Length: 110
Image (cartoon, rainbow, N blue to C red):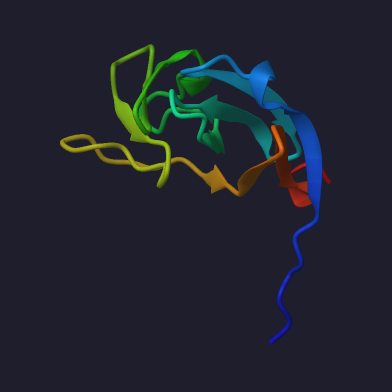
């Protein structure tokens, strides 16, 4: 079985994403939110709450979760799943931080 090789491209510097905030990039799949936690972990998720489509990038980032600004659903940044009692999921995407530079898989932008 042939596996896909990821090609990483630079998106921004870590400091371009506010601590406990987000930055949005436009990809072929739609808008992707890059979230930065208080400990400088970065996650990439579809910028659309599974509940009513609210912009997660405008939510409040806490630990490894984000609270949707529309109806307070909490989405896990690692899995993209809504925390109970809510149900639903958003897509997550591979992201890396190397030497202070945020990288994503080029396939997102192709």
